[in-house]
Structures are given as structure tokens and as C-alpha cells.
Image (cartoon, rainbow, N blue to C red):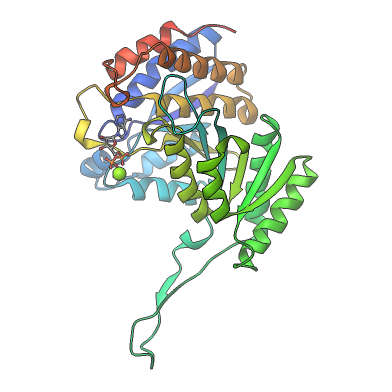
Length: 343
Ligand code: ATP
Ligand code: MG
């Protein structure tokens, strides 16, 4: 039995996660997946109830699960996701950006994945205000971390995803300026990717930002350090439509957490109008990963079927209000269920 820990989250979280579970239950039945769901309390409501956003009991359940499906968390987001990324060693962040049928996008034919290093770079938080200097003004410095071990691990993940796609990885860096940190990232990543038999090219991050808007269809997998990846993935999400459709995976060696990119959206919570697409696409990524890493039979097939059903619904005009439609969150889920078919 493969166990998925489910964090409903805050705001629209319980709605988008609830709708996704409806679809997952149908998939489990259709594909006879040995899959069980365990609910885990975390986030704002856990903090109110227990005084902690991620209580010990919850944390231990997460440790025991094969994968985690997480809704958006509100005020306490950082207490939950930042801690989980670090403690569960989720060192790679996967952000697909794909044009969905029937959804207006800036560009057509985009289907790319950004693989972002998730725990190093400027986000390690090693920042300091320097002691009073003779300069007469404040000076702050921050540390930029790049290690061979992390780069190797994240490059391997990029290679795995590339092999299931067009087998091409673009390393995005700025090694012309940050010669040592970006230089290490570029050299180690290149070595790993070439050894894995993946086609490699590289691009400076400023050029990559431009190309993401100008000619995004040229990219397959982009591999990049934490900060660049953070910025480029929001950019890419907007190029293909909206943040409300963007899923993500936080991947470790043996653990992974899948979630929508968007936040708790308290302004529309409880109204039954939130778009569950991003969470459903995150669930699709999870099923694929569960087959590859945990041996879930038919996981990849189920993932593809879910993706197709979502695309079919959208292309036939089944849309929530954020996309100009009038389907509610659970009605959307029902329509996706109707379109689930065995291949
Ligand atoms: P955070 O503080 O975590 O960023 P947020 O409440 O600002 O959370 P965002 O994800 O930044 O939420 O979303 C901004 C706005 O976009 C929301 O207020 C909401 O109106 C809209 N939005 C976000 N996600 C969805 C969704 N899944 N369906 C419909 N609308 C959404
Ligand atoms: Mg926001």
C-alpha cells in the first residue's frame, strides 16, 4: 500500500484539495491503485488549535508517508513549507509550465519544466549587517551557497525528468559574473547531465528571461539555482496562463511534496469558486513520481489520464470563474471525473 499524507491547508485549501481528492478517488478505483490517504493537520488552523503550525504528531505522520499532497497554507506558510523543505531534504523544486487548451496564454506550444535548486543559493538566509564602519552608512552582506553535492543531486533530478521528455536540459546561470558559485553550478551540472546522456545547453539568466517571453517553446527542461528559479518560474507560469493553474513538486531522494503554486486566496475562500486545476495537476505529478520512486503500479498511466481529463474539460469550456467560466470547484471536479478514461 502506498500512503499519501494530505494537508488540506487554509483559505481555499480545503476546497481545492477536496475537489482533487474526489478525482483521485475515482482514479484509484479506475486503475485499481493501492493508494491510501491520511489527513494531516498543518497550517493556520493547526496553529490556532495546538499552538504550532506543524505539530509533532503531524510531522511524524508526514515522515511515515510515501508522498505528501499539500494545499496552500495562509499566514503560517513559511513555518510549514520552509521547514518541510529543509527537514525532509526536498532539494529540488519542479515547476512545469504548459499551455492548457482553452486557456488564454501569451504564447502557444509551451511545454517546459523548471528544475530549481531548492535549499542553497542566497536563500540560505546567512545575511548580516556589518559592524559600524568608517563608511558612515549601513552595509549588509549575504552569503551565496553552491555545493557540488547539491548541484549533483538536483542535476540528476533534471536528467530524470528530461529523459521522460525531449531529453534536453538548459542550464541557466550567470557564471560570467558569479564565476565561482555559478561556475561550480554550471560545471558540475554539465558533467552530470552529459554522463546521463542528456543534451545540454546553457544560457545566462538575463537572456533566459528574455527567451521565456520571446521563444519559450525552445525550452524543455531548465535547470537553475534557487533564486533565478524562483523568479523564472513565476514568469513562466504567467506566460502560459496564470498562477492559478501552476502545480509544483518539492523532490528529495526518497520523499516528495506536491502542491499548487498559488496561495490561500482568503478573498474567495468558502465560496466554492476556487480553481482546483493547479492542485489536480500537482496530484498528477505525484502519481507519476509514486510509480518511479515507490513502485506504485500504473501511477504514470493514471497521471497521464488525469492530465488528459483536465485538458479535455478545459478545452470543452468547463472553467471556473477565474478563467471566465461558471463552474464551481466541485462541479469542475465532477466534469473531470466524467472525462477520465482508461487509455
Ligand atoms: P499568499 O499570501 O500565500 O500569496 P494569496 O491569498 O495572496 O496567498 P495568491 O495565490 O497570491 O493568494 O493569489 C492571489 C489572488 O489570485 C487571490 O487572492 C485570488 O483572488 C486569486 N487566486 C489564487 N489562486 C486561485 C485559484 N486556485 N482559483 C481562483 N483564484 C485564485
Ligand atoms: Mg499572494
